[in-house]
Every structure is written in C-alpha cells, then in structure tokens.
Length: 363
Ligand code: SMN
Ligand code: MG
Image (cartoon, rainbow, N blue to C red; front, side, top):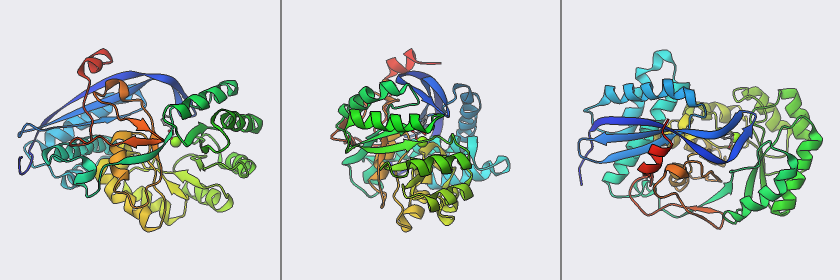
C-alpha cells in the first residue's frame, strides 16, 4: 500500500445517459442526463473516480477545461484533499468561489477522496471514521410536473422499486387545485402513510409561495423544498417563520459559507447539500457540521453513491435522495432494498465505469 499518492493527470469525459422517466420540472425538461466522468491518475497506479451532473449538456464546454486546468496546476503534488481544495479555491478567487469554480473543484475532490480510500483499502465511509451499512432513502426518480392522471400509478411503481417509505413529488402547477390533485393521486397510489417530500424547484415568487404553501400547510407534507429562488434567504426566513411544514433548502448552497449564511438567518428547517455545489467530500465535511451543531437534519441531493458514505458520518443524517440516473454507466450500481441504499463493501466510493456503456453514451 503506498504511503501517499501523487497526482499525475486526469481524463475527463462526457456522456448523456437516457432517463427512464424524463425530468419535467421548473428547472427544465431533460430526456437525457449529461454526466462528466473524471478519472484521476496517480503515479502510484491508483485511479480515483467521480462524476458530475451538470444538468446542461453544453456547460461541459466550460466545466471540463476548468477541471483539466486545476489538475494540471497540481500535477506532481501529493494528494491531500483538504489542501487541494483550499489551493484550488485560492487559485480561482479572482473569478469567484462559486458556480463553475466550485463545480470543477468538487469533481476533482470526490475523485481524490476515492483514490485515497482505495489506497487505504477501505470504503470511503470507513476511511472517514464511520462504518458501512444501509442508509435510509426516499425515491426521487419520478413524480415530475407531468399529467396528474399519471401520478397514482407512477407513485405505486416508485414505492415498489425498493419498498420506499418516502417519495418526492414536484409541485408548483399553475392552479392550487392541480397541486392538491397531484398530492391526492400520489397518496392513492403509494398509500396514506407515504412520506411526501414536495419540491417547487424555485418556481414561485415570494408572494405566490406564501399563498401556495399556506394553502398546503395542513396537507401533512414531509417538507416544502425550494419554493422560491435559491438565494433569497430573507424570503426563505419569512417562509420558515410562517409555515408549520418544515422548509427544506440547500441543493444550491455553493460551499460551506452558504450553509453558514442559511443557518445564521434561520432560512430553513432542514438542509440538503449537493456534492457538486457544496464542494465535494471536503465541502461536505466542512458544511454538514455547521447544520449538525444547530440540530438541523441533513439530507442529500443527487450523487447517491458518494452521499451514502457521507450520511454514515453525518451527525444529523436525515434522508438520502435516491436517483438511479448514473446507473447506466456504472459497473456495479448500488443496490436498494427496504427503502435503504446499500453501501458496497469495496474500497473507495464504489464508483467504477462500465466502459462499454461509457462508449455507447459518449457525447
Ligand atoms: C431536481 C434534481 C435534478 C433535476 C431536476 C430537479 C430536484 C431534486 O431539485 O431535488 O431532486
Ligand atoms: Mg430539489
């Protein structure tokens, strides 16, 4: 086992994989899901792997060169993810810490942590001081802003995919009556006991959000997610004050400071950082304790494979968001059973490519 790893180079590839259920949401309509695949090579022969989900296929034109540039700048250096994270952020301070800067750094960071865990011959969760095991998950693979008449059957199918106890439903239709009909349909298909997380995907103005969320506040929903634009923290603080249903935000936190700001102004009840935006594993390690220290429950957004490891070491771990969208290019997709995602007992994060599939879906 090598004592330390030295960064050699990276290959960065792009694919677009088919979605079983097209994403129909306020952030866009997606029939395919673009992924950026990172293979990070070390002089010692260990390869760290990660993927990013950039939503927009064309954004790889800016993200990929940023990743390549950051890797080239650190080639020949010892892999120390927290140091690499700080150095990369400092190097791009003058163009801003967020957006593409953080996305590129996060992708590299997840690959570095994978490489280190592989070199230590431990699953990532174990290397970070935790253990592997099952992580409670809700199914987020469907229930988009599609025709309400399709939702009951889809909800039934989504529960059956892994005996899930929770589902995410997208809301924010033009009429309140249609949102209510959607909630009714999902309960009809999934059963009255289903935990129903509802996501507005930033689709409402503050005024409309106040009206809509007050109108839905007695529906027994598990959380209201992102009713308004992600960076209106004072608006979120008002919503959190006024509503009884817990308010969930965080998938658009860029870096740990964003977590701190949201917690400081009491913008929400729950948080759900996204690994691409919070800053990969290093960003999570710094952000999650800010929430946990305040007793705020932490869920995940996308990246279920890496996120599962992190939930095992997050003090106030809540729900893992289960999406199987990267499965088509994974050599061994993670298994789901009894509403839980299983962390495989193998070194690293457990992400390896099915190279034939990567070729098939290459852009
Ligand atoms: C979401 C994720 C990915 C695409 C569209 C919408 C959503 C979620 O915000 O929380 O799953
Ligand atoms: Mg969301």
